[in-house]
Length: 559
Image (cartoon, rainbow, N blue to C red):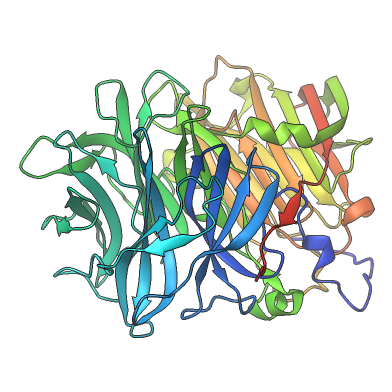
């Protein structure tokens, strides 16, 4: 990469204010990580999350469940901690999931992982709302038989965590998955229960992979084959397929598999269409900074919603100095695409209520090497949708099949070669002279008789080199494009220090956590660019400034 000519920022770098987001969920202070137990109940969306109330770093023996409520998934009210380590010997509360049992009076069960004997043993606990008539679900109680599940044979006692949302089988029994490890083999362990209290382990792993380490935060749910609507977790019929999602701690990525759920045989199991290979070809919800995701069925709007934790990319010491660390992605609706081979994702529609001051650009040609600034919006907090019209794909660069690897294509030997169709896209959170910027781009290749698109979120110039200790990676993925479709779309949610980019209608998503020093607040700029040899056309671009979401406190204590 070329050297950056610095405009010197202030000597005393402000680590707090420029990076506090306006419409992404993040803690007012201290530490946040995994999303837990999201649900809709009596008019409120409930969001729980891993939280250290005593500091801005992860505390193994200090974790509790934060709790916030919302009418629209965008504006939130923070409540008191929902779940704390109150059982005998319990020292910390790790991740878990909510299950709502329908009926005239619904019942809510919250299974979660607790630590006992400091951090040496992980077991599963059950919590329930104290008052189901309270729509805010402020108080929670724990079952007297806790803990309900301990690590079975073949599972390490310190690597047994994160129970999934339960589903009810055709036999009436409830099922739940728990992430686990034995050596380097990752597992998802299946349990069954008739009453949600007494659980029996299946001796056969529901899913296992070698060389991956522990499987965290398993999620298992059906998706409709021919609808964008969501579906309840217990539905099992010919109208759905099933998705199994896992978070691999050693890779710090979330992977999902589409396949067949076999429940009517001697061995209950999930058969994925594609096995895990450990290569770039695996399906992921997000190819950037995105981990420990959790979904839920929103029966109020018949959709399935996804959240995930976005990790900080600066140092632990920076977080402590700032006073907080961690944030969540914007909730996304997702569904199975028409091919049945992947999921599509899109920001929930409620986000659009924050839009204002729209600007529009149509039929603007971007010649080779050209850059166009998008003016008239607040570029540090923006929602941008752009549809690019592609030139004749026959002019695309040719790659051999063996060269198709997104990270390899980001290396100097390929990136230094001027492309034919691309790279083109957006430069977000950019300084006026573009020395500081995060680049989200497309580049088209021809491989045999197919066309591939390389999508990149390049953070290498996202912050001045005067800011030390930052991770500034290049995130990348490759996906197929239809040569009969002459356009490709990009939507980027820009929120001061996070950028979520949705490529080709949500076929792929890349989230970046960045820390600009120059491109902050009114000094942030947004550009559309084309560095390819062939011209591309902005068929249409719409961009909006974004208002700040409301985050209010209703609790007596907020850590």
